[in-house]
Length: 311
Image 1 (spheres, rainbow, N blue to C red):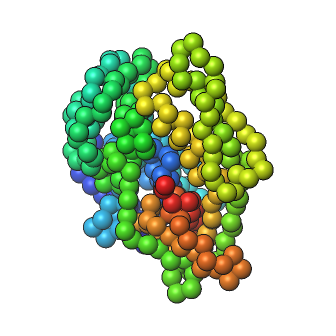
Image 2: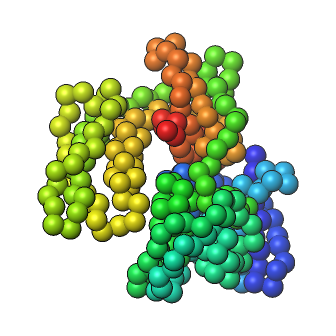
């Protein structure tokens, strides 16, 4: 069971009591987590509310700016609903200064574009990226961070629940077992989406050349599939690896396992995972891609989505 706290503009805090319902979403592929908390209507309690946090004892699961405060009333009840996004939303909501950087590093990007918004800690290799990074007009600070991480680390960034910025790919030695003595679940759904697999990417390698080079998908699940994309490898830095990511992303998107679990499991995102099911068998080489935690009068539940492990 999590505890929820409001932080006011003056820095003071108050715990939310008599929780009616909670929905918390955290997805590796989505920049900002989101939290919705519903409790008995109290307009005075929410006056000057700025942030909301969800705590598992002393560990922060979620810290974010409040986006919406909604008061709802009908003949049966009156409730207040608070909707918030995690700290990554600050980067989504702010535009980055248009500029071109030569050989930027993670600490440079952090100091120039994240530190001014209150971020104080990051993880990442600080050796410079051997290329240029062009920040276009209208690009958000998150888009800038994502572009840098795509070029330098071939992955997307992640901001943890307590506001730590992860430049490199998140890794965890912790392995979660679902079923057979591990975390129990009430239902399982295994989804193979062959329609999302890309079989081949055709590359244009020179300004005056044609799309004559090819990058093939060696995924065994791609046998019999013809789905081609074209990529101009002359227009972006590190572009061949970008084309390779098109294939890898299609492989990742083509498979998932969804589990409905009883209880609160908010600390397992990006952990390695294995499923041991009496019908689906043992499914290994997975990681926790997303979680959706809910609590209401029916109890606590966590929907866990597992994807293929990073390659």
